[in-house]
Image (cartoon, rainbow, N blue to C red; front, side):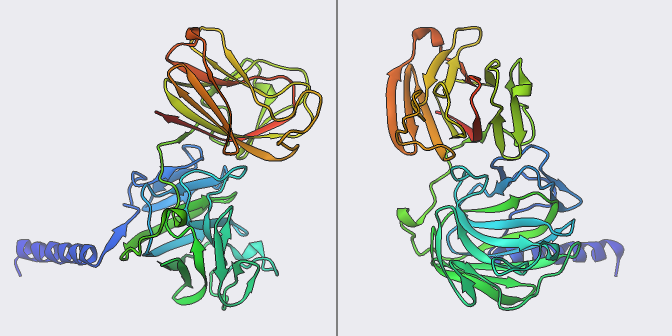
Length: 383
């Protein structure tokens, strides 16, 4: 055969194979080159990267990378491997768009991705557990404990070998096949429509052949579906204070997904470098020890005086209100024009007008009053 004809024949075969795959309904979630089809939920920029045809994850901080769209009924195929013995990761199915309150994880049904070195116990295995987390529910099939489904066989391979997962999600039922055989799953899952996420949890992992074939919808109700993503972007990277500024950085301790304020002599406020007009700010807060003053967040225009908003976590006298020591609370601040609405744990706490001097563009800050506080899950959404 003439060389040109031979090359055209090869290209035609490749093209036919690609079109056949498309026609068969498979969607490649990873293009082999970059992460343009993924959303970094709460990790550092360097946590996830595309290199050598695989998705590489450092495992630090704990967090997630998710799809930009939601899925309901689908078949997913993915290959993964841990780069160190005892590695921990997972796949979030039907997940929330941002982290659940007080944790770095997404609300979801989790498909466990553990290396053999992590060990097998009565509470977990390294061969493909399936279980709901942080608000989701599921009835496990087969061997189980609580709501966790344990695999019927031990089929996963140890680091650094590759493993193949096939996840079938239909009408609220999930089945996991490990290296070619179904081993675990659950029924009556809620949510049963949501995002798909890959988990970072302390150890380097690699992912490849990440693809999904959507199946016909069964019209999950709003109560059975995760909320639609609203464009929140993380303000804290889980590793350091990039994106923030203070003249007393030693007072703030990045600790994986948490950001801790050290109790002691008060320092200067911690300010976001991000500036915004109308916006929604989300963060989680935990009061670890009775404070002398209520935790206070700040809003200011560049060069202006800050507006102080005290959060009624505990009264200065120590009388507990609705909020408990050592318990996570989610704060949502909504700014529209001069109006500021404060919601804590889904309950509106206050609505007030900001001083005109605050200006249209603002930055967000946390006052350092010397208290023992822990923060997490900072998100900003422009309105």
